[in-house]
Length: 241
Image 1 (cartoon, rainbow, N blue to C red):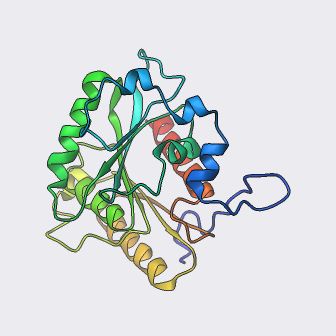
Image 2 (cartoon, rainbow, N blue to C red):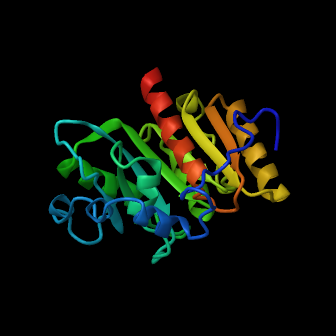
Image 3 (cartoon, helix red, strand yellow):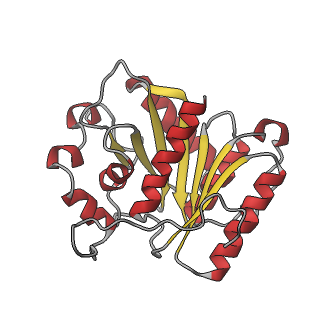
């Protein structure tokens, strides 16, 4: 990778004692938490009409008096291969709200996200300065694109195995982007992906952003160790603030 990366390697921990877990991350995560948690809080989720988000994660321990950080995951439209609950529980089963928004490159990303987050904030206690936009692959590139275009909307950007946005002028909001927090990661040992993440990190550093980057051992962009590192990264930012 590069010595300038803050973390060069993340070893994904075994999910079961004694032997590696060969199941997909969503299946393993769903098995590792109580069924009621995987189902989130259906009493609260029922408040939202279809179309606001594709999936919603509300911790079972949700307390209305606490302002929660919100992670908004951009996903491919119709993608049902991942469980948002399983993904969020691998990050933390109690610290965050989570939402999955299916979107592609042709859609007006900013409008869709603004509407989704605005509606979520009307009915759930979301911390206004701790909304994070996240994605993997193409959706990771879109997360970078909208996060850099609208730095005032987000507390940080999470982009996994993503390329730097090629459209427009991604760093046009130069002054507003200084010290904006970004988490970059690549999965596996593909030299092309590793070089692209290193290039993205250099570009963001040049613009004055606060960037952490790492590499997961497995080829899965939702590697368990990587997701735990996201939790650590968010909490470090909250503590620093």
